[in-house]
Length: 174
View 1 (cartoon, helix red, strand yellow):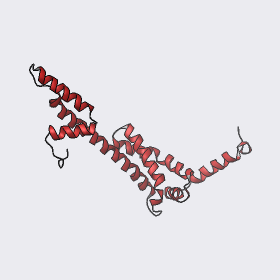
View 2: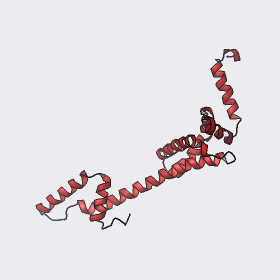
View 3: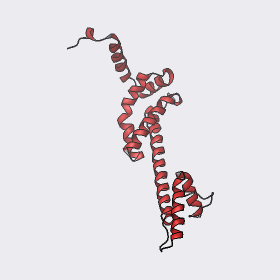
């Protein structure tokens, strides 16, 4: 059993600092992060909000992967933008809102990707299939079209298909 004399002085200092930080409220910790770039205060906030902020990110982002990314990016933003927190404000709400914004960005990007994939599939299906019949010249033409489209970058391929197949103009956005 270790007694106080057996604990290394640096470790003892860290334990005392950690205990002192755990007594501070969230706003005081956030102010310490903002003004002194206090890593221990940031760690304390991270530990306090890990479960709640991650759960919120998971709910908003819709997947574990997106929630992980949103939580990490949100907490990084807490570190970077701590100076924008007003000391008389609600630290809990500020931290959770910061993580929530990142989760909503992830969810929006995922929906946009899903819509783009769905649109790409619906446009490509009729274009990339040669019409019924045994016309070797037409089949060769469609094979060349398929090869050419597949060599394009995905964004450019989508633009070509939207313009030439779906008939959308530059002003019309899917």
